[in-house]
Length: 295
Image (cartoon, rainbow, N blue to C red):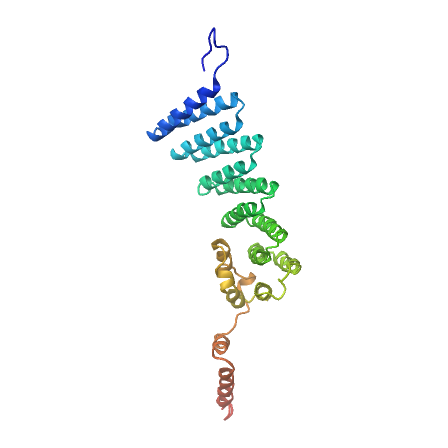
């Protein structure tokens, strides 16, 4: 890095190489703070040499050293900086992968930040027309929003997912996203939005007449009639129980407004289990009870 009478300009390329070697040695010795410092100096040398891709790699490595020291927010900041440099360098795929990595790091500490990072990664993938990767990122964001009870944002995120699945003609997954949307809307106490969501899904090929459609119509009917038993019965179907865990929990905790006033009597539930013959025997018993008159 030094200059002199015969060397007017620092040799940034060689300096970056040496800083990189130092970073590896410090890392192997578990001296993570010194390794971080070496990575940052390597990044600066690459920047001065206009080698943005290598500078971004060094910033990302510095972030990983901070991760080893459990300084996660600072680690995420450096990885975000690296992703911006990847974009500037014209390597958006690497930028999106870095953002996903940062999201995973911070997910348990700051879900809000993780959602933001996953959404940024999804935007980058979408701009590059890598829709499957974009959907993976959006799915992670949606689940975190549901887990954090940020249901208004979750509803929008799920709508975005469903639109892309429809665009790539993955219709069965569209049906599953419709179920998730309806559960989110009902937890928001917005029956109108839930019903509209099902109505709009009739335009998706194969939805009308599907098992998903029938279950959702039954769920909305039970919710509208404040029939907690019917709602619980639908939400305990395998169709709902084997969804992603965050959505399955929404189904299992769904309570109709008013606390479920209209409930089926125990006899009705037993009769349903036993079949028509049992219903007939109940009727006979009631007739026999009063056959000799009220006295």
